[in-house]
Length: 68
Image 1 (cartoon, rainbow, N blue to C red):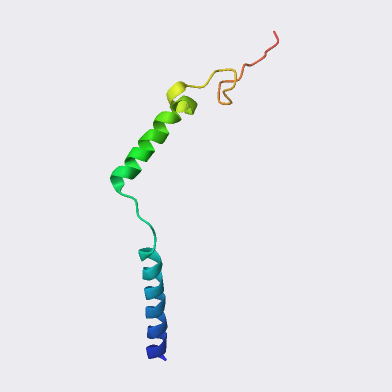
Image 2: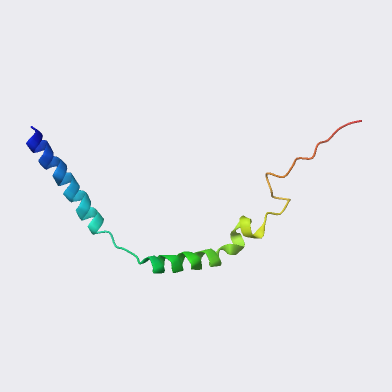
C-alpha cells in the first residue's frame, strides 16, 4: 500500500508544481512601480496622510453633558 500512496502523493506534488509553473510572473521592479503609482494616485483618499475631519471622526472623545 505504501508504494501506491507514494505514487499518489508524488502525482499531487507534480500537479501542484505544474500549476505554480503556469502562473504568470511580474518583475519586482514593475510591481514596485505599479504600487508606487497606485499609492500616489490614491494619497488624497488616505486618512493617515490627509487626516480625518472632526465632524466625521467616530473615535473623537464624546462630549459629556452634565447638569449642575
